[in-house]
Length: 286
Image 1 (tube, one colour):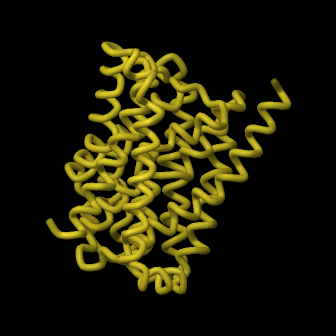
Image 2 (cartoon, rainbow, N blue to C red):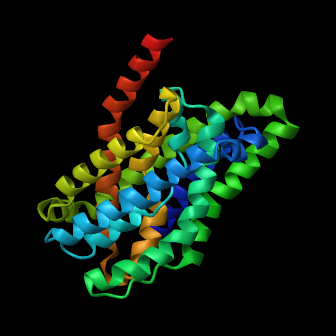
């Protein structure tokens, strides 16, 4: 097995463990919690899959960015929330049912909307964009669907095991994920300076801040869920974004990978003070 394949498998296995641990804390009814609040569901989808993608499309179109950087950033805006985000959203006090239901709804929306957006934005960049639904589906099943279902089943039929092991699984997944990401960064390191010099860093900062603001604005009256939607609007699934953009730009995968990693790192850094702010607000309001 070559080193690249081993790193990819390690990343998938890490995310699998983390999402299983999330599933061990999830009730089946959490998956459809938003069905009782359709207004919040509409606001969330408006933020994630209308306002933010349109901003990213026209913002990257207006800038002299090297291809395939715009495709990578657009693919990120069409991706659902990352599978480890529920753990971060919990720090804002967000309701678990709202977060998990939002993740399920966003995954379905991404499958439907990504190919439709590809038809619209191809002419803007003078290139046919072939966002393949099957590729998105495979990534979502491996990183969200299957491990989340497994964790819920374990919680249902072995609750004691779930209580004892979910924290250890999450820790093991995070440690191996960080190790795998460090290997990836080492491998694509020479391309990072190139991507930063081309403007991807400043573009990622602008997009992330805009997405945080939109999610916060549309998050509704509940301060806890407001923070969750802000994080969800800004942080997107890197695996789906890579699968989407590399389907068209097959020869430029290293630059796509670097662009996605830079955006992901920028978003993590920018959301740290936001999470702290939301926790202070919630603490003051009791």
